[in-house]
Length: 633
Image (spheres, rainbow, N blue to C red):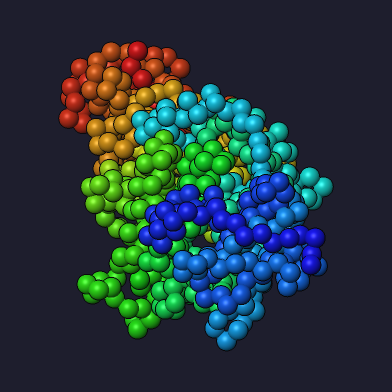
């Protein structure tokens, strides 16, 4: 008999089993998985795993030479399919897996714990007994979060891949090293939030984290769960919110993972037309299975509660919503009403958002959703999916297409720059310039811009200006803040040398001032998602490729003019609503930004003259490839 005795024990009540089987146990991570505790005077670890098609489940690990004969788990009497047991003598840091003998052809599988809170550093695949005790110091942020995450507040997000932001001697920075370097960097730039590409444990670096195996474990590449908490805590103490990429859309087929977990389809849909993703060669969750729904929603709430996360950006929502997503005719089966909507996935998404809103009302949920699905950001109780925000992929695609054009031809494509305002308030949108736009030969944002070096940088400053003046939340991927020339390389790091060059510093200074303007001016954020917050002055001046508009809050207005060609305009007249003196408060052509310096240094007075349907006219200088913003004194 092993010195590590197996004792019968359970943390699961009848109510736990009932809720789990109903798909409504949103704290099931507190009962399943591994949990250090004391029993009958002996310290050890309680284990519980859902394996309904198992004939036998044994615990294997570094404590028994990965031989499980002496450490069998007991199946519960209630038919729940849960196997459990307390192993005396085990402790935090021990490595383990479940050896599952399936009732199906007696397959023997060695699986990581789906609910493990820590995992070995890939390519090793064991789970780690964990108890991430941590003394949080972010109480002030917790009180501030209501305001910071309000839809009336500025939301400017720095998206990043932890492994390739910066390296030291060719190695990853740890969570604690990142806290030391990242926090002051984001503070200086003025971002309100940071968004981490998936940090849940994943085996394959080229997946960028989107092929997750251990959904409850922060990747060990950068340190322990407590170290990750320290990073979040430091960001919070600096007034910066943390958003995580969350991937409930698919998972990989790795042998130690969720697929074929007990010799049956526990987590994936058994019908390959609904359970296999042809694009990513991965498995798709069975959203209609209650125990899977409990697993996923419990996982979402775990990150919010255990790690004080402020928002979840849900990846690939479109692939979840449609049965025919990326499938040809004959490769999918319609739903019961003959449509292509995945009704079970839609129900899951609604339940997920309802649970987040109920238990964490000040946490944001954001959908990466690229279709015209109706009601993505409408509340669940009103028939919508319930997200706070949706990525505005149309704005991103149209504007990147527009900005790559030679300015000579932009007059023929004027609709590309203005079209987004035709639907800008049909949902609550976030404008994304994300990692997906700077990989796979698409070029970096800077390298997409046309013209000589001066025009290239001016165009990028103008794109960022349009982004911050356009209604909606903002997201920029790392490297974009200083106009990195190269595409993003997940295996490398940002080209920090470039950030020291004057032209690139001009991009960073422009973005810093835009973030400050966005924070300081209620007209740019208080009505970000309301039609009343935006008013065209002139959208049809295709010949000059100039657009002008007003951003407004209840009390203030800002006059914004963008010149999308390198031809400057002196004494350019725009109609405004209010008479009086106006001051230029932003100009993307400022010399400190590496611009030409065509700025309006003096306060300007309106004239009583009808233009653009308004009684007052303001005559301004509009710089080449520049954006200017005026505020009434």
